[in-house]
Amino acid sequence: MTTATASRRTTAAADWRALGTSVRLVVTDPALLDSCNLLLARHLAEVDAACSRFRADSELAALDGTAGRPVRVSPLLAEALTVALRAAEATDGAVDPTVGSAMDAIGYDRDFTLVREDDRPVRLTVRRAPGWRLIGLDRSTGTVTVPSGVRLDLGATAKAWAADRAAEMLAETAGCGVLVSLGGDTAVAGEPPAGGWQIHVQDVTGPVDETPAQGSYDSVGLHTGGLATSGTAARRWRRGGHDLHHIVDPRTGLPVRSPWRTVSVAARTCADANAASTAALVKGADAVRRLTRQGLPARLVSQEGRVVTTPGWPTHRGTAA
Image (cartoon, rainbow, N blue to C red; front, side, top):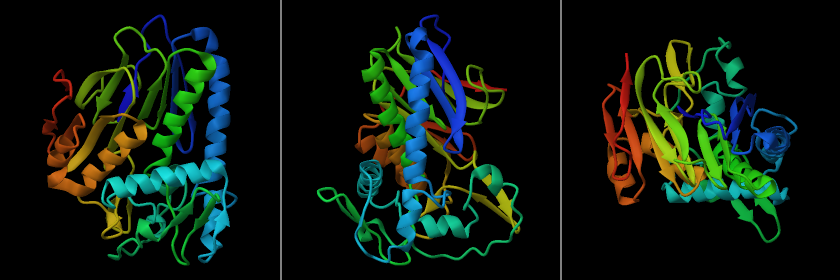
């Protein structure tokens, strides 16, 4: 989990929920918080209408029945798909938007608050995702081609991309420093507070602005770009004797079995950070070497609680009781 504090007197924060997750907005000009929050709410509503897998009226859901025909989509969805396909290419397919059917098969076919309450049995079957290279996106015509039987899921990239887009838009509009965090995917833009945006990186979900009651944690000063944490512990549920979570391995179509329980990455954008952190869970033992080679500061926590960092990650850390 990644959270941002707002303890400095020069900042103001708002917390609420959208896109099925927590939303945190922090600005360096308190007088602009309300207007920025309204703009953010409008932006996230547009993202939801374009990208949600759980809304029958979303643009993304409409692609399910197109049977391989080129379909014109909004610039917003085209941009989201571009980010998803770029993430797939950058991670060698470890982050793949064609896992929609696999997500449905493990029971993640609705908002997560409802998933945990569902007691329907699931049948776990190893089935490789169709593969991101099957998706045709023509930005010049604004059309998308999705083969018959392929269902898209942008859950691995859309929130981080939306945070990047919102932070840049709000900073430019308001002329102040802005932090946007969507479910821990954090993007910053504009002039940061003195010392940077103070981010808590922790392994156990907990209240913002508080030291976590358990698990290890770090405090990071973020000045530009984005920071994301991916993990297998936060969104878990049990169904038919199976312990399940929302990070799917495209090679099997099943929840990934990773030596890491959380991976945090800082990068040029939150979308890049999130793609790298999610891919690290899928890549497993090779993750540290790959992140180091990519020059990405990262913090990986093993299933046993051992913390491993790559060059560039701050060395200060703590452990709650």
